[in-house]
Each structure stands twice: as structure tokens, then as C-alpha cells.
Image 1: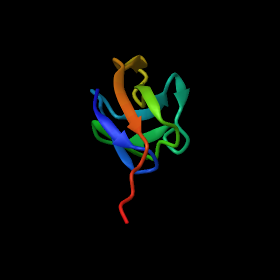
Image 2 (image 1 turned 180 degrees about the vertical axis):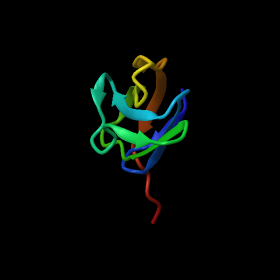
Image 3 (image 1 turned 45 degrees about the vertical axis):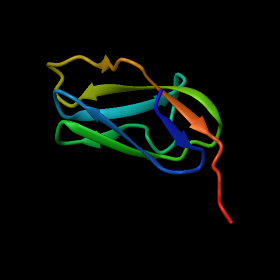
Image 4 (image 1 turned 60 degrees about the vertical axis):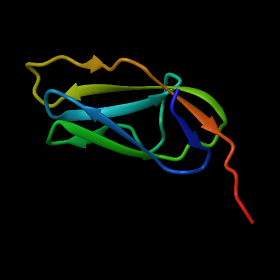
Length: 88
């Protein structure tokens, strides 16, 4: 799995077919600051600072602004969060 340091910013991106509101999830729970990210294009971006070490399961759900389309949920992605090492 890809790895990232705890407390450092991670850019999460969802590419969607139609504009809408995207909510990003960590282990099935909405990520604070990454709920209902409105996009007028086909890309939603969220900056996230993981605070807990270990394996994380990330996903996203989009609710399209056009009611002719239905909501959909992404496939899951895995990420390992490592303890941040600071050199002196």
C-alpha cells in the first residue's frame, strides 16, 4: 500500500463523470473538512491530515447536481499512515 506520514497533508482526488458534491471517507466515516466538496468540474479535491497510524481505507461518494444521474460510491483505496520521523 502507499505510505504517508501521520500529521502531513495528503491530497485526495476523486474524478467523477458529472459535477456534484463529493464526500471523502476514511474507514467508512466522513473525513472532517472533506464532506460535500462541491465541484463544477469532474474533479473533487480534499486536503487531509491523518492523525492516526496504521492502515486506512479511503473512498468517496458523489451526489450529482443533475438529478438525472444517481449517486455512486468509488472503489476503495488503501493507505498506510506511518509515524512521522523528524531529524535533528
